[in-house]
Image (cartoon, rainbow, N blue to C red):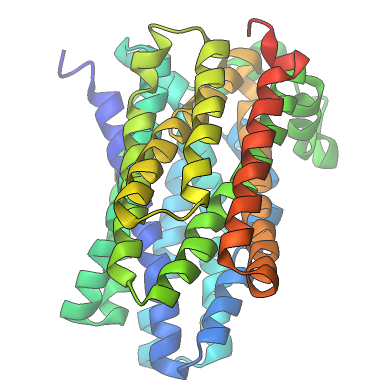
Length: 403
């Protein structure tokens, strides 16, 4: 049994290391900017601009996954990410780091993440088949492990910055990317995408038509199209409530610890929800899981939008994360079951590109709304909008049928 589980263990070790490394870098870059330039505005600008490469290049990364192979793209992406991260301390030692140089290096590092993320998602089917485990359960485990990486990464990064300095933190992140690459390199499993491509002899599509194929496949599948649109709208509303609305609320109260507590409860709920997807899938149909997830998300955010005392806010936040957690594994499962193996990388990458676009737009509009109407009115409006979107998705014809 332990030998059979090796593909799962290696894939999830890579998943965790990559999540930790990315989360540490996301913390270290603004810290470095503030240390060198003392400009919070420039730190925000760098983070905003560095989100553009994933948005624009994710579809191309999906094409690479389907064309070259899942393992090769995952390993190559992590190695390139490691090199881009080590550029920060190397350039600082050789030439020094100015604001524009930091921006350039941040853009370089952001080029490689989407392809690696897509490749590891696509490898889930291969790993589940090699290990003989339930596919849906593994999908939940994968998202739960990824969430752990993003929750623990900032804490680990903050400790490394305090103990060894921000530049040395980049070396640690690079080491994590290399460990991720090694884990996938030692992964001895097949590639269903390449096998399906060879069986179908699908060499007709090339160039731009092949890259945009993911858009076409996603749009032509009514269930995936409807679910993706609903997920994007909910994400555009849900994520700004953490980063903008709650931050503004607790900053006005001068209670940063309370903000950390609420966000931690949200993250804990989301992680448990993702891990619990396999348990849910063995007991409920996929349409029922979707309804429970959407209705639970709608019901949980409404009391939060009333900004109750911290204990109640954190409790509602935990349930919001708990209901939100299974949604991403559910979407992954539907792609695996409804999209041909040699096109899954492109569909995953199209969704990833859209998910990069929606939250920043939501954060921009939410920030403007908070300044114009205040935290309380903005949060209530967002809570109602999310609840209406979730309930509308439940009632949509495409998502009421058995899928």
